[in-house]
Image 1: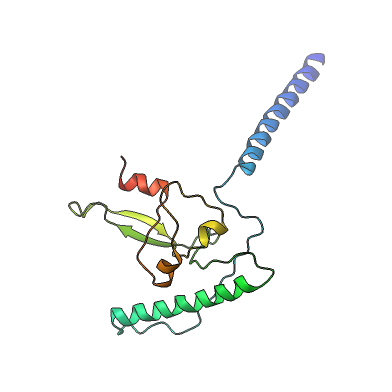
Image 2: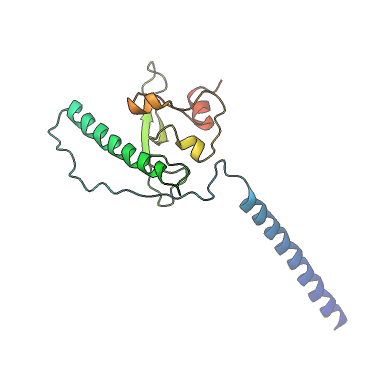
Length: 169
């Protein structure tokens, strides 16, 4: 009887120690920095209810339609930034983490001499306020400029993982 009680106490103690270890590991994971600030950030989803561009439109007409939509969103962003309760606002197609699992992607050919090698990456189109808003620090390079966003210049910022995929050296 004493051996049975001792064995049960030892088993219970071992289970408590293991449970405490799992709890400590979980707590450290929950407290780990994710690489961007999310406190007091609000995501507003804007559904585009306008008609989709006709497939018969030329590439230039399609790009003009897209440019007009982006300009409208930038106007909304600027109005939001003027509101006294809003500290900062940014326009982007996706937040740093998308909980619905939907995101834009693009395929890249890193070396034109070897077009069969393709890299796929998540793509976020955004403005000059996105990185400061989420307090994302750039390891190298610079943020987008206001002029680049206004003219919709082709400027790219890549994360470290994708940069190492493109050029391991």
